[in-house]
Length: 106
Length: 106
Image (cartoon, rainbow over all chains, first blue to last red; front, side, top):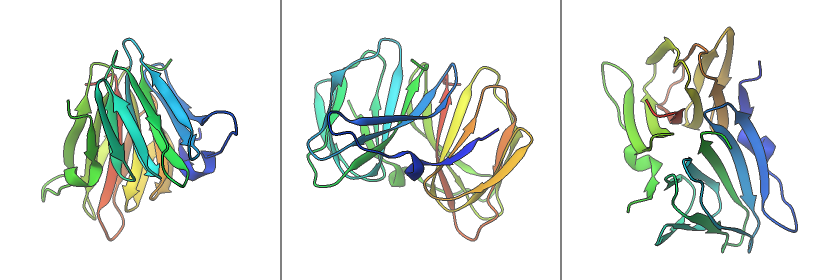
């Protein structure tokens, strides 16, 4: 079983929308990578019944969770509880790479 | 609502056993920090029905998942699916800091 992976091996870019890759998936948890190039956005959305987190690996994002907004850089953790609208914009000059978990898995 | 936090603000050490802190908790997901000082161990254990991951923030750990073992350092992700025995030992010279998620939350 392959149970260890290097996050940096899963980064990527798409010109039209932000990039997503799945690292691991069980019934209870989906773990993946999101990469936003400068100017790219993950539009605000919510997941009924699913808790979600972002961990900023590189770059800087402007996050929205509910009515609140904050800028987060490397080493910051962002929490979007079930049912709360959330999204992120890369307003920086470099790639924004995020470790992302959604529970239960979609 | 406080939805953003800096992981480094939650690290710590205990002399007798590894250090744990909770970052965020919902019904579906518990997100926390584990810190193992050199020589400290998280003994192999399993969680029936709970998927778990570790993301190595600093240091290096020797991870066991099921019958497999691997050493993982910064930027590596370790996956322990529901019901599979897992544990970690800090065989390095510095603190091992891990972002950890368990779904559903214990």
